[in-house]
Image 1 (spheres, rainbow, N blue to C red):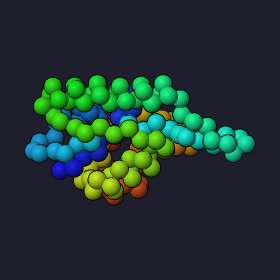
Image 2: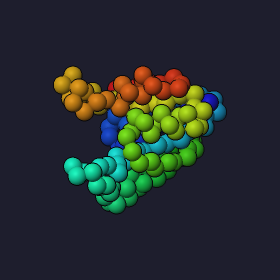
Image 3: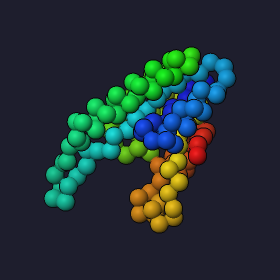
Image 4: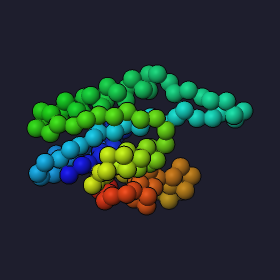
Length: 134
C-alpha cells in the first residue's frame, strides 16, 4: 500500500502519523510537509518564503521520520511549496497513492469559509481514499 501522510507539526498532524503506525502489512509511506508560498503581493510581485520556515519544516520532517523508524516504520520525506491541499493531491497522483492520511484542525464554519479547509479540499479532489484524523 502506498500512503501519503500530511505533516505540518501540529497536534492533528501527529495524530495522522499515529494512524500510519497502526497500518498493517507492507506500507510504502511518504511523509509530506507543505510550506505555503511563494505568493504574489498586492503589486503582483513575488513574495519569497522565509528560509527559517523551510528549515523548520525540514527539521520537523526529519524528527518524525526518526520517530517512525524507532517504531519500525520507514518513510520517505518530502518538503513541498505551494497550497497544501494542491500539493498533497499532486503528490498522491504522482505516487499513485492508495491513501492520504491527514489531520483536521477542526475550524468552525466561519473560518472554513474565509480560510478554506485543507482536509475538505483533499477529500473532494483526491485520486484515492482519504483518512482524516481528529
